[in-house]
Amino acid sequence: MFIDHAVIEVKAGTGGAGSNAFRREKGVPRGGPAGGDGGKGGDILLEADAQLTTLLDYSYRRHYKADRGKHGGGKNQTGRSGEDLILKVPSGTVVFDVDSGDPLGELLESGEHLIIVSGGRGGRGNTHFKTPTRQAPRHWEAGEDGEERRIRLELKLIADVGLVGEPNAGKSTFLATVTDARPKVADYPFTTLEPNLGVVRLRDFQSFVIADIPGIIEGAHQGKGLGHKFLRHIERTRTLALMIPVDTENIQQAFQALRAELEAYSPELATAPFCVVLTKTDLLPPDAELPKFQAQGAWAVFGVSSSTNRGLDEFLIALWKASRPSEEPTSDGGDQAWVP
Image 1: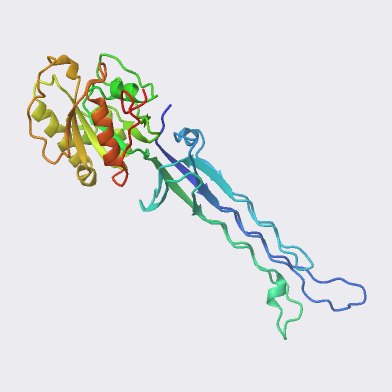
Image 2: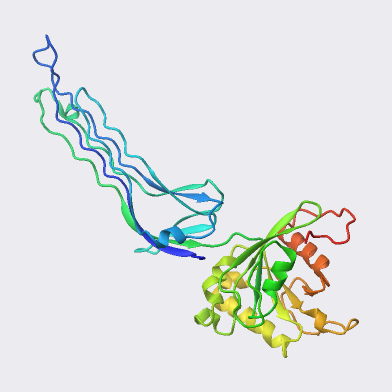
């Protein structure tokens, strides 16, 4: 099950209390205060883990609490600090404070850490309260409470290329053809119910990641259909590929509808580089040209067929260049540029 958002409540550990103790040694009739400080409470951290792909674990459990610090002891012994609690999340997770709505950070690289609540400071023992006029203080401090808050976790997939299109535009078929991903493919709308990732491997050992999201329909930004729930997963992509079947009755209208939905969802997403891909070109006669339309703002227009591999070489190399502008793919002279 693909879960890409969760709300959890976290509470850091309380600091340990300081100690109220006095030295008791043979031959030392007036030993004085010797109460140690309490230990610090444990923090709660998030850690990015590349092995995780969803936030499913956090749909089963909502409350997390770190260890408290140990109390101080006699002989000026400081209490042990509470153990930090590390919660692992997929790479690409964004963290928000639920009550304020403020972003707390994001974790992009595997192994990256983010402290979301800090443990309370340990209380001071009575040693700290000795003065020239008060040689035997019996005052000590309790430990401070740890921070607590409600946080919202949102997963944004990390991919180089995002596929956008209406239901049955051929996105899943294309992904299954050029990558090892096995999305569900069927002859009815909304076959894709959750985002899919696939890695395209070129024959020169270079690769890039493609994200396929459920089909976008008119009004998606208002909650219609399924695609609006997953548009966040293409916000980080370096380029978008707007996929339109070549047998669409009005390609110009379909193109404008996709652009309008992207802009309505996120003005930033609407400014991302994009190309247009006319799919299912095997439906055209062998020598037929692609239908003409105005693709305003697109860096290129392609025609591909996932069933016959028509145009895939040119398209995939172009996607590589768009996602890695500082690099150039090489060729080993094989029959095609990508590894099926």
